[in-house]
Length: 384
View: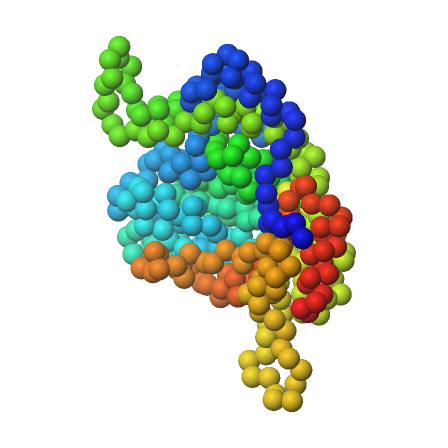
């Protein structure tokens, strides 16, 4: 059987138009009309004034933190339940992440734990320098509550919307709520440029500084002069061409991801001990449903010896799907459990640890057919 992947790239024919034009015009460097056009497309879609196309979402977070003034010795608030790329750039800056637990509805950062973390760090004389918000698996975070805390304590916000292009909060596109916001266009994202990312900001000066830092921080001189550290972070004009073609398909891709989520939800609801989650969207908001995720019911602590076989763990289920040539993945392992961040402060932890222990990501690529979905469901029923 052909392999069903978790979230593979899904290209159309639109991308070739921009790629062919770039090759014909010899624009293959990290500069050119595709980059300018791609940035304009992102601004038009999100309503944000300025976009800077970069080599990755990680690079965008790194530059974003630098633009917000994060440096050695600082602390940055960050959800624990996220991919490591959210927090690695904090270390690049010589700063320390302060991790915050999730809340159970959206799985994103808990505002109560956030307040607890801010107040405790301030009591210790370590007011955080910035706050990173994440929209996990495309689900909008509870921005009303989180941004209220950020405003109260005057915390600049970096919005990590790497997984959330096409999602909306109260009708407003995600990626438009931070002083700095970022997207990822990695191969597994809802829109891909093969590899790439973008930094968005309403502040023209911050956008100008981001472009400066991303192109090796070359001073305005006729020769190569550099007064500060710069980075080679600008996206290639070729890859930006793929992004332009993908942007034309974005709403269709979001529609299909949401259809896949709905199919799973309607066809797996009766499987014992399994729930497609998080199922509820905030009022007036829309998740792009980048990945459909499921939770298994907690296994009994000490089942009686004469009881039926306990339900499988997420890892056992993942391995079973592998025997059917179906890719699945555990939910993100909380960062406070990672050896890399063993010394970082953590506020809470029970919610995200429970999610990690019980969760699995199912194949969600927009090119999946109904037969593919039925094959996944059939494999799940074999084990549940």
